[in-house]
Amino acid sequence: MATPVHATDKTEHGYVELEAHEVNGGPVVNSSRFAIKNPAVREAFAEFVAVFVMMSFGLAATCQSILSSHAYGDFTQIVFGWGIGVLFGIHIAGGVSGSHLNPAITTTAALFGMFPWKKVPTYVAAQTLASYLAALFVYVLYRPLLNVADPERQTTHAIFATYPNEYVSNGIAFLTEMFATALLVGGIFAVLDQHNRPASAFSAPSAVALLVVGIGMAFSVNTGCAINPARDFGPRLMMLTAGWGSRVFTLNHYYFWVPIVAPTLGGAIGGFVYVVLIGHHHPQKATVVRKPGEQFHF
Image 1 (cartoon, rainbow, N blue to C red):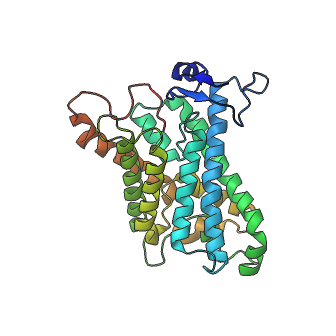
Image 2 (image 1 turned 135 degrees about the horizontal axis):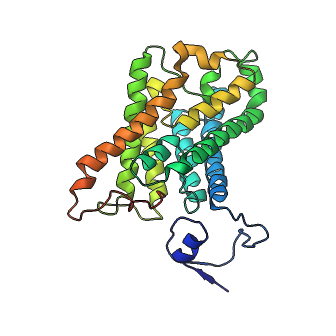
């Protein structure tokens, strides 16, 4: 028998708001014996799983393409691998943690009052840890091929983390990451803006995934298109502990800080531009995506 579950019920139990729907019996065990009572812990676990799934798709697609010398995929496959990872990452935890998947999104949402600052450290930690463990898991799966392609771990560092093109300076790389992340966050604000042309709760994950694919197709040649501090820093830590050594941080004049700082700054810029030029000029005076204090989510 179908059990009605309403948005108010979800909110009371620590979930972000969802539309009323019916649960007809599925894989979720709804038992107080197994349920996590602390909403903050529940959100952290959900964000962790969502990022782990996203990173697994993206990194595995990259490994498969590069380690097979593109016999099992090309650049298009890599970009769509990341897009599919984003799609299912949002579906997995969108109703629990909001599926930010990205510290640049989390900090921008907090900056504009759409997410509490006190939750930011927990989310960023969950995102980074998930990225590290997903990279480690993919590394274990592809270790036999890595041992053939790069037994000394000298040439495959760009499979897991991002580095600038040899003809691109760190300054141009910084601008690329900042601009690409501004497009990402501005696009997400547009997708969720209820006073514009918003995506529905069902189409928003696909819209954001398509946005990520488009950005990857447009801006990857300069930097590999990290647009996500956790996506880059977690795998970089994995390589540090798995045989690549400290050079993963020192290469290209200590480039590692660029995929952390540039996306964080770019996210804030993208949100600011959307709010100032679009959100503040709707006929109805309202905030761009959510009411003040209401949690940012897909």
